[in-house]
Amino acid sequence: MNMKIEILSLFICIGFNSILSAQSESAKFSIEPVLQWHTMEIVSTVKLDMNSAGLQLPTGRAHGEELLDVEFPRIISPYLFTIPIDSTTTIEIAIQQGQLSILDIDKLVRTATKFPTILDLTNNSLNRKILVPLQELLALLVRHHVPATLPHPLVTQTTKVYTGVIIFAQERLPIYGRQDSAYLRPCLFPKVWDTEGTLVYERNMVSPEIAKTRGIAKYTTIDQVLQQTPSGISPYLQELVGDRPLKILADKIYGKLPTDPVISKDDAIILYSSDNNRRLLTEGRVVIVLAPELLIQTFTFSNTSSP
Image (cartoon, rainbow, N blue to C red; front, top):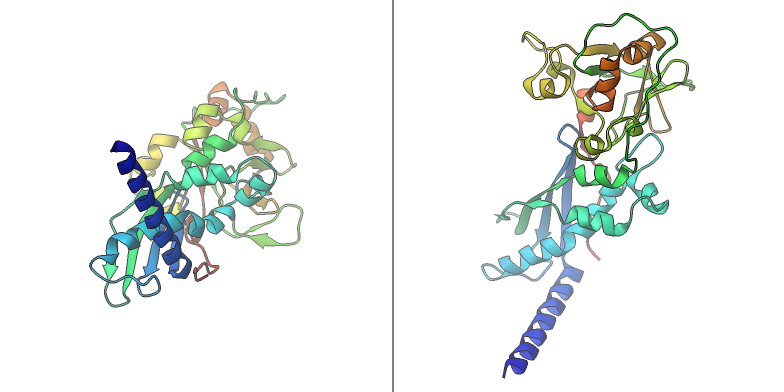
């Protein structure tokens, strides 16, 4: 008797999945994803055209929710692939090079927070807000086990006891080595260079546990670091860079993708001139100030699904 029930349940499940697949093939989906660099999240509104899926209310709503859940990984993936890891590598390139796999991306998408669906009666669509955290990517892309040893300059500079580092790169800046200028663009793991082309800061210099969970730099806008408070720093940033951060103006930017700030040689020497300052880098206590319009990235290419 139990065997008959199990077989019957299997056929019901197969039948349901077949119906779901058929509906998915004709269904029209659209998505509006936004990458919030200050929170390291992709916030998306995914929409299903109920008419295209042959769904009628009220019974079709549950099927529509199933379709949204099944199709979301496929719909969001093209946007995830474009996210820059550093100045030369995107998620797509990392997959091609074997640093990441499609399975990694699938697991990332399945960590998404899904909000209750909302029915748009005017357009007969079922809409769901879905939030994908990018922190999981950080852990997959950090491979070192101990932070790289930071250099000690032969000639040091007198330095105060700082509590963090803020690099201002919100203006359009010259691109190092090119006859062009651009705004600094955010990425998962920015590097910092000096004007002599020496690497000052990158992911392998940061404690791996910190790099995996918090990243190596937090992005913000100038209003968050020039406030009318004793420290001038917004409370959520003060937790990272304290109330006495070293403030540095970027001279240029660098990279095939212009993601890396370039600072003066003198500022680079200050960063390396004390054990305290080197510790700040090892702990990833770095904030980069961007142009406000680049802190929140709206994806521009179309990704409406209609097979």
